[in-house]
Length: 238
Image (cartoon, rainbow, N blue to C red):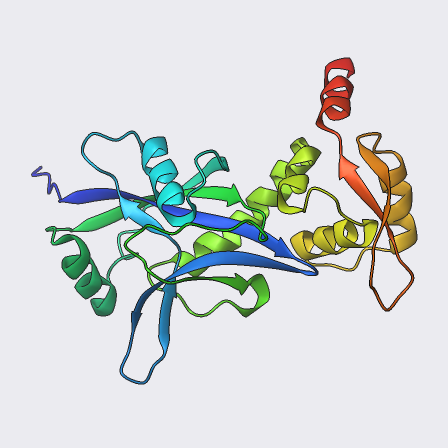
């Protein structure tokens, strides 16, 4: 039986989560703008260079996009459907961006976490980036909407295994209300605030500070911090 080999390329796509006050966001890049001014947004990614390991490619994409050398990064799934790059507009963009003879494009998806308040130094080929709320994502090219959907399942499982991960998305000092809203955003459900306070009370690594909010219209809330040393001691004792 004759085997039909194809020109297969491998890329990486990065789902970068950020949290701002009460909503979960995804960092998107602008691929193009059509004549009507509509943005063509997508996940940041790239074909893998000849000399690169797949993890190196993901780190390169994130560094060029953010200027941050060390970001929390997790490979979570490979997307290899034969028709994932079959849309004529997507193929046209690939030909323009990379000029390859591609029969199939396989992508390795990565999950990353970034504090929204960090200043990003974008030196990538995508000159415009924006944080987009997870519940208002546009229809994106290829299978990027599906990748984001799968990444939500992955981040929930990741937090269950390693609760410290969630604090990568919060400011260095935060309120219990912010932590509560972050959990609600990640799990996409309402969480009873009284039960949540009980849950936080069991987290010895969430420690109160002698500082409260200032210049707020409501009652000032106390700030807390994540104590990594306490968390590591707890992990080693389990």
